[in-house]
Image (cartoon, rainbow, N blue to C red; front, top):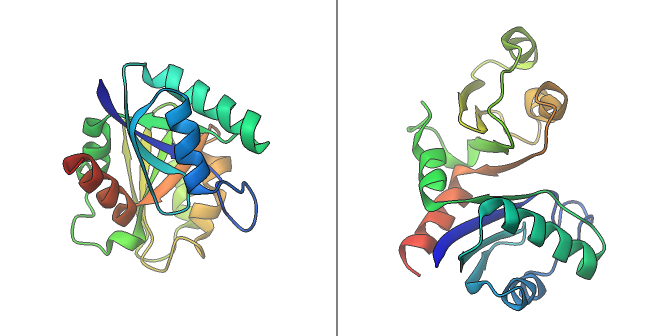
Length: 175
């Protein structure tokens, strides 16, 4: 069985998408996934399965919908994809809480002028395979650029900071 990382969008944010992690772990185990572990309350899980990423994404989204009443976007990554998200960007020396990787279904082709128009001094970004990495020294939650990403990159997405991704990578390294 292969190791996988699942990232759900919009879970336990501002009272919406309520998903208790203990119940989420139970649900994943009931789906036949092995060695299920979760990290923090925002829909992050590490598990083993022989299924494909696309199959797992659909199955997790559908199972959450059936059990919890909402269908969050699910992104399932290999350990190599997670590691690339952690290292394939020019922000190695930045505060890991201020660098967010936005995971996407397709590699984005953003309008650079629109990004620059919304960026604060110090904001920077990097485009990678099926991801957009954003450094916001002033904070992701107050960034107009981060706020408008769904319009600038119109496709399903979910974001995690490097601190969270590093914790997931550690979970993979120490099963």
